[in-house]
Structure formats: structure tokens, C-alpha cells
Amino acid sequence: VLASPAQGDIPAFSLGGVSTNQPPSFTGSRGFSFGNSYIAITQLGVFDSGADGLVNPHQIGVWRFDGTLLASATVPAGTAAPLVDGYRYVSISPLILDIGGIVAAQYSAGDADDLVTPGPSANYPPDVFIVNGRYGFGEGLPYPNLVTATVGGNPGTRKFYEVNFRYVVPEPSTLLLLGFGGVLLVLIRKAACWRRSSL
Image (cartoon, rainbow, N blue to C red; front, side):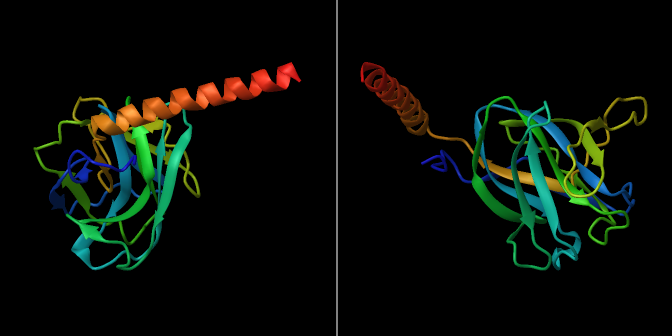
């Protein structure tokens, strides 16, 4: 029900081009923070330079701004994950967001999958606003607690577009169903508590 879309899956941004400037190399997570209207994230993806398969698997996470990990998935090495507009995606259980968050992928220093720098097209979808670059150091999938440094006098202009996600906008009927289900759950719990207290 949560995946019932008002339109097809939409990327957070579309690939606009690739620069041969090698991105900063470190072991950790890299991505971006974003704001959004009401969306359900359905897929997480990483950039596949050359569209010929990933050399390494990459974990991807979505966090709240307080560091709480909301969802994660691993894009496998090779070509098993579907390629869409330069990114290989894996599906997740739909993640409902209404205030944005942080998305980042895990890379290692000198990673063979991170030798060029992808960039977005000028046309962003209306539901997502990418704010700034985020990164974190360490093995595994560390929370990207750091904001990219000033570039050319503008704070946080360096964003890591190696990671992307796809989302749907839930239909109003889905939202009504969710609201009804929440009210029903509360009533059931209250009735159960009342029965226990009356025994």
C-alpha cells in the first residue's frame, strides 16, 4: 500500500554529466543532506562509471538529522542491480519522509568505483531539495556527521553525487488509509488495556 505511487519512481536528481576530476578519496560514507515534501523512498543507488558494473559492493544509508539510521541496503558488485540513468539501485521497504534527511554510501580509500565525479542536471524534481554535502570517516557505514568545507567562498557547495535514491509520492488514498490504520491501532490498544484493568 505504501508503494502505491501517484507517479512513477523519481530520482532525487538526474545525472547531468561526469567530470574526470577525481573526487576526494577516503574510507567512510559520502552523500548529501536534503529536504523534501511528503515522499516514500523506494530505492537506493550508487553511481556506476561506465555502466559496466561495480567493482565493489556499497552500503547505503538514510539517516535522520539526529543520526538515527532509518534504512540501509547494499548495492552488490557487478551488474546484478538494475542500472537507471547511470546509477545501480536496490529496492527497500518504502521509507516515508516529510522533513528530509541524509543519504550516503560507503566507499574505501582508492575505491575503483569512485575515480570520476558525477554531477546533477540543472532540472531537479519538485519534491526534493539537496542542501549540502555530508560525509563521515570510518569502516562500515558511519553516520555522515560532517558538512563539506567551503569551496570558492560558498559554504557546503561540494556535494557527493555518487549516491542517489528514487521515491514515489503517495496518493491521498494511501495517506487516508495510513491515518485510519493508526486510529484503529490506538483504539485496539486502549480496549486491550481496559480489559486487563477490569479483570
